[in-house]
Image 1 (cartoon, rainbow over the protein chains, first blue to last red):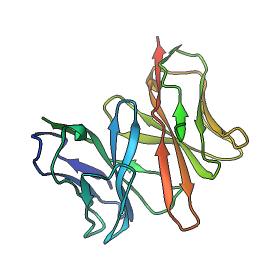
Image 2: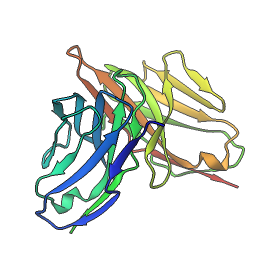
Image 3: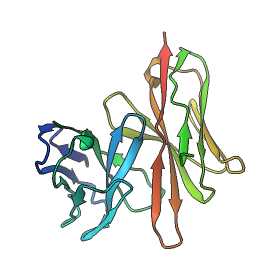
Image 4: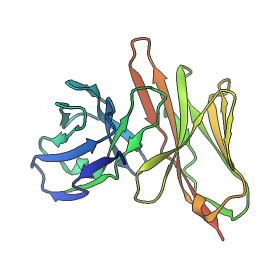
Length: 113
Length: 113
């Protein structure tokens, strides 16, 4: 079965370190998204991509970057982790239609000390 | 005013009862609407899309009221397994093909035996 996987599922890091969260989907979806979820804020969009070599900033992109070198992967990098980036991160993918279903990964819980 | 607002709850409802909750959105240009379900410490999953004419899927009914800018979710004959957080999602598609998918903070529902 096609799926979307994230790794690591849990990570503890220190302030200032670079962290990369991986996201891999096997649906061959063009659209991929990264969200963070925090209490009281719901899901907020960090970055998104509509295809290979395409990346776009979301509403909370500061301190994060993504790259899309192939269809399957959209890694999220925190260049210099900050305590404010402690959160649960969800990757999602969608076939391409703006009305299509978003499929989410299981989430990556990141703690920045 | 938040772009998408939901009553956070919690709604504590006895098994078998009917429960309804609303979600209001501020941007009249919003075009697509969805309800997602999120179990504790899990990823969100699509429950149903919301169409202008309203739609029903088993015990679940979704309605859209464009004039008052809200969508609703009705759950009949509630089951213990309906306990979850329900996320309202609104999508705005611009003339340039850009979209903005906004999640509400969710309404927590607990079904009591």
